[in-house]
Image (cartoon, rainbow, N blue to C red; front, side, top):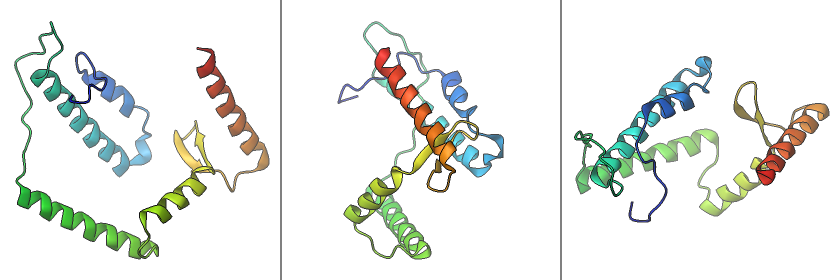
Length: 150
């Protein structure tokens, strides 16, 4: 709100639900996690629309309740997240990578990601046959070209 970023005039649940319809049913826990994120985003946007309405708009009476946390709880949550990230890094064999090292690895690996329309996921394109790599590159080119034309 303070940075004057774009926001919806009136929050709509069906827009969030339509986004979730693209997540495959077999995604299981991923679909459940995305559902929770979607509900949280809708709650935040609805609350902002009620507390900081556009000029001339009447967002409604109900402002969603929002749980607040004191500083002690936030510090404890931060500590738990750091512990969890340390455990994940150790389990993956990453050790104690710096942010710069992680960014470098990400930049290198994201070049290999391609979007698969069938599964609606990004996949590692390194191991794809040459014909499929060409097809993905062509589709990406056409999508970017279409954005330029519009």
